[in-house]
Length: 515
Image (cartoon, rainbow, N blue to C red; front, side, top):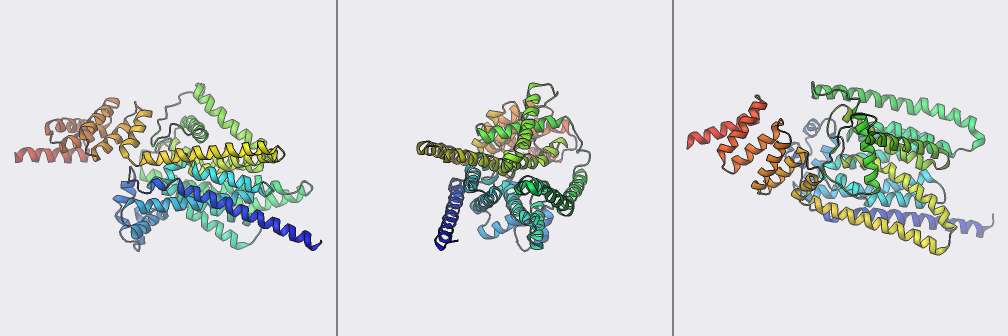
């Protein structure tokens, strides 16, 4: 090869590397800029349990207390303890850590997307996926919410594990195997969703690594696939299944008599998947609480649409596995990462829908979208200059729109009253957001408004004890003891063994005797 040709190729490769660094840096910077107005947001909702009232954070050296406080997510609790030691008990430091982790995840997703694409449009695929992930408003509940740390930190370990796992399955050495397993264990100790890592790694291997092998080596490829499945994927997946069974047993122990299987809830899960996809495509109607109505029959229009849309995604992934394997893998990744939350819903544990659960799953979604944009880039490369500029302008406007929405979402999170009123407006006939709006109003000193919300919650669900308890406590603070007593007696009538109601009623009686 003539020296000048080698020099030209080296210069071209260097330009591509510089372009990749610039694109990755731009995406990472965007991820930080759009969350600047979230850094001074207050503690809200679960933050009072995970951080404010968490006594295990007082000494970062007390590892035993940190682990025992949250045995299933000790790494998250350790990260809170480190924040507490560095920044104190105020929100900004905790927010800074969340945002820095999100920026790191943008880098990791960019690297993964670029390595998966491995063609001349890899930079475009990676840039599109990383930038969308960086600024999309659906990420705000994980990044801008301190208690969303488990999602963001789990994604860090998970993405790092995938990057190392690709090297492992390609046979690059035992060190990559140890790193992969180590990152997976760290992700598991951060959030249970990481149990899906072996299945995502298997899909990555089959849909992207194997797809790049040449067609004439199909027999060798099949033998190599079997070897990797038996020596790598099967042991990892078996371990994940065993861990899942153990976690289910622990769940039954933690909540005796409260864990039961509801197969009909699968239809709700499929409807929730459809709603997540719509929010990712059109992020309007976001809220901290989403009401999900029961689906009573497969033949309901909502159920049919949910089943059809999920089936369409699966069929699309299957169809694209040869022509666009990165997009196929992205769809499979997205669906797999929603399985743990769906399983908990089938067991009737927790809310069926929460935006922060989409954080790690959305990495696959944006990877698929990035692959689609890369394919569009192939067509635009042959189009006229004006058309290419138009395509770039449309993408830039989309990013700008998402960025503005994210900044607006951060502003909503700055005021707990506004945050919960938003949920009430979207679910006016559900008692839970009204109870939580009442709490926010009560904390803000707006007790009359809080009482009104509590009363509406009681009216919506008169058999629920919580509304009566909150009414009794709020009226006690206001000095309206007779009214408070009436609601506390109603709470005791519903739940004769309720300790909180009896304690508050005892306090009222002591006040009455003192008078």
